[in-house]
Image (tube, rainbow, N blue to C red; front, top):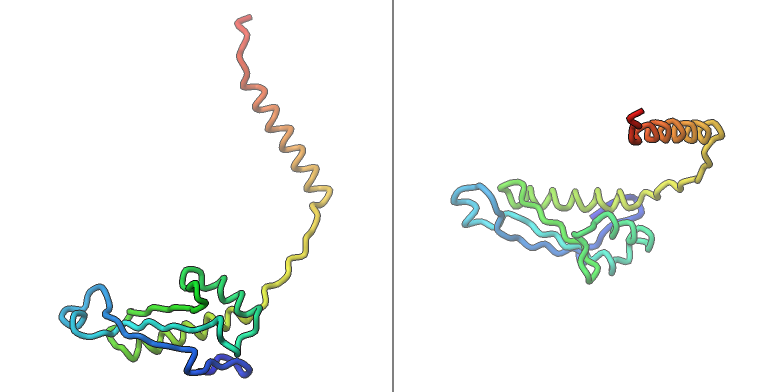
Length: 138
């Protein structure tokens, strides 16, 4: 499976298992295993660099297993072939997203004007709260 010009996934890294889909579908849902569970052995993949694997783990979230595999489940359509195609497309998109390096944040300092505005607003707010005290009967 080709992801980019430099990265491709070998067949041994992917395992597909077909399971029965949940939800509506009449008799079809009881007889045919249309849902697909795609398992990608990401940790053991020699084609993915280390930083990409780390970003992929963060993007995958709960879909990442303890043994370093990415598991995608698709049961959107009643067609096994279409579900398989959707799962492979999602995997490719996830890997492409993990390939993008996040932009490094450059820390900035607040301007003098913004500091003064903040302090002025705090002072105004404090005065409003000070007026909420008990009223003298005199």
